[in-house]
Amino acid sequence: MPEGHSVHRIARQFERNVVGRVVAASSPQGRFVEGAAVLDGREAIEARAVGKQMFLAFEDDVWLRVHLGMYGAWDFAGEIVVDPTIASANGRMGHTNQRGTEIAPIYDAAGENSLSSIGAPRRARGRVRMSEQTTGLGDDGAAEDGGWPPPVVGQVRLRLLTDVTCADLRGPTACQLQTPEEVQATIAKLGPDPLVDDVTEGEERFAATVRRKPTAIGLLLMDQSVVSGIGNVYRAEMLFRARLNPHTPGRDVPEETVRELWRDWVRLLAIGVETGQMMTMDDLDPEAWRRAMAHRDDRHWVYHRAGLPCRVCGTSIVLEEMASRKLYWCPNCQR
DNA sequence: TTAGCATGAAAAA
DNA sequence: TTTTCCTGCTAAT
Image (tube, rainbow, N blue to C red):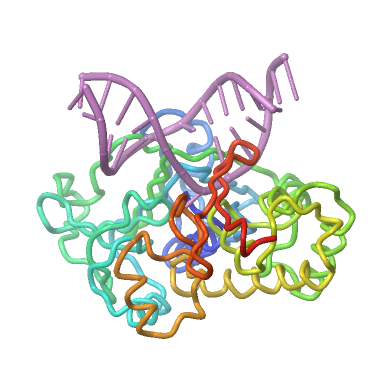
């Protein structure tokens, strides 16, 4: 259930482990057999993330578009080259066994192969390891548990196998092949992404869009055509950080506040990509931060805190449905 | 064993 | 605005 930061990390993972290699593609689940057949035997050329979507380019202008939706996840196994920023993230956390980390080796029953999952928190357990040079990879012929390739577990829509890395995709909302033109069309529909677009131009686009809409800002932040990558957690947290009432029509939000929202997203996304965590209480002092991170439910200002006292004013955090998604906010701080 | 839930979005109405 | 789809975890039974 990734928001934008996770998708950028996934793309980074593909760049390090899959791009530049020929893949063996298959659809163990059977629901992407034709697409897998097209990809099979092609070299991956490029990985690109825009908002919550990832695009993987292969030889001969064949592109794979993946949107994980709420349930999707990529599981990596084998010799996984982990981005060095993960080390700094872990160092900052000060934990070796935290929950909620997006890249976490998981050991199978044999205790040999390591698996790493990015995307859904359901896989986010186990120890974070800095050096991912995995042991236990059998020779090419080995097909037993703990061997190579790893056994298929559960519903795997698409498996991309290189000589040393296995990437399994499960539960995506979208998984399709596209032409370069179709990729461009998909991207054209998306609002600015701070890690894709020039941040100054992005700010102008975002501000111009928001300032002419009568729609509630709480809806606009979730609208991927307005701004890319923000999901339900970041929405709630950003509105609180801006002390902004979610129901305020976009056109009524002061210009400077709109721009500050964009700059906050630029900041939060960068932190999220670097750490793999949705750090929205980044202004806490180190000790408070340590305490907050020790408990999964202490990480947010308002998200998932319905009925609990606001961290700033003590008012009970409100939970309401907005466009059939849960919205958390403080009616006192966010006027 | 089952029901309910989740960091999403497109189609249907 | 409501329904539908995608998957797996967890609390309740």
